[in-house]
Amino acid sequence: GTLETRPIKGTMPRGVTPEEDRQNMHQLLQSEKERSELLMITDLMRNDLAKISIPGTVATEKIWQCEAYTNVFHLLSIITSALEPSVHPVDAVRSCFPAGSITGCPKLRSMEAIAAIEKRRRGIYTGAIGYFAGNGDFDFNVAIRTLSCSRDQVDLQLGGAVVIDSDPDKEYDETLYKGESLFKALGCCI
Image (cartoon, rainbow, N blue to C red):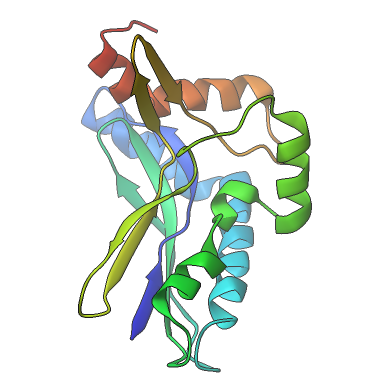
């Protein structure tokens, strides 16, 4: 079967006006930092797919594609390959999670650092949500903006990528506009 992954890196808020939308989209598409992040993760995801694919079938169909969502613009790539017939779909999903867009590079060392720094487990946040169909199809997504409820507590989990040339204030602001829809759903003001 055909595998497809769409790593996302690079975020800008939607504008208030169509002109501001165009400016923000242009700024995102021209950002060397955001483009570098996406290129790094595209390469990482290509490597993840290559481990479970028929040799020579991994292809980057698109890179630096800008997509508009309710509150943000994102840059993404589209990578495809042909699944090696001997690889079970469950093993295919296992081999790609946690996603490189969450861990960063180098993947294993980044996961070790996250585990050492964070004070609690993430639960479903940044994990896999999806399904396996009876015909062998499957579709999974990364849970990158999540609300979890239990009894009288609501956990809202959001995040952003931190790289060597990140500006902490800009990364914090990015996290807020990524979460704007969830804040509104909860009746919160930011």
